[in-house]
Picture 1 (spheres, rainbow, N blue to C red):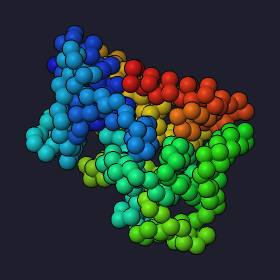
Picture 2: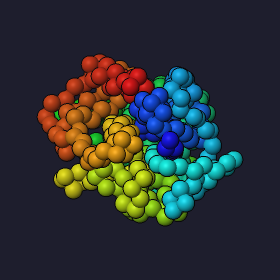
Picture 3: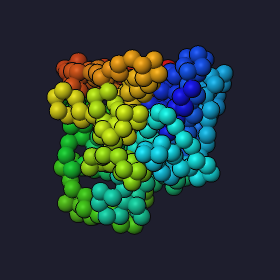
Picture 4: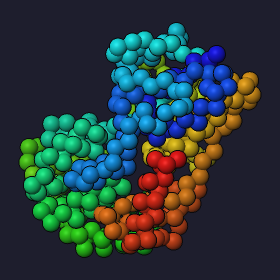
Length: 357
């Protein structure tokens, strides 16, 4: 019987584990799922949590009832792929096949001061930001991508918070012209002050240095890019500049046939030459595909390449509005968009579907 270990119980890892359940029942595999927390992190709702909303928690053991999957709550410290051994805080695990789905974290080293003077939407920092602004104040959001837009909109629905959104480019640069116009219109309606094409050089206590001068805040949210944990590179896997594991089109590590990468931790290029973006919309299909390829290996069948095409970009704009941007398979925007309450309904339905699936 093969021992399959999955590191990370996020969108990719948890789905991989559940999809391997038939192999457990058939006696072909033993599956161990390792995660630092015993609660599934619904990361796409962290901006709601930060703004003070109550979001339902999902204990991981509830997902696993009756599946035969072993759950280990522990921190991963090192992977030894030569010996096929994983070192955790409290134990050591060996494996026959490994799925690495440890996710990503906000890059806190992009500019000076993020670590000391800014919050992020990583789990602990989200809760700290929530506490900081429980009685209102001025919030400065740095980053004009999806995270920055969603966070600005969510906080701006509170009458006691003044929101400023700063970006070095244009807000919503990746969507269509009509999509950008809707975002601009909605942010203006919500009272968000937008600072476009403004470079932020450093963050200090209470203010930032920018090309527009000093911008002051009671709380600063860094909504920049993501990177992965140094554990991947430190364990000897080939990685890219963001620390993501380099994988083949089958999602197997470049270095080891019995190791797969799934979700944000894995770097894979589209046929266009662009990398797949870090998102649950990508992580879940990757997790599913990895489980299918592991199943193929258990049956001594050929593993298949991962194929993926985008369909939508969904951006929440508070609780009563959203932008649902239709896109080409390579993620470039089409003209058609859905907005307002219909957009919000579509966005919320997709968020709920991630947990349901």
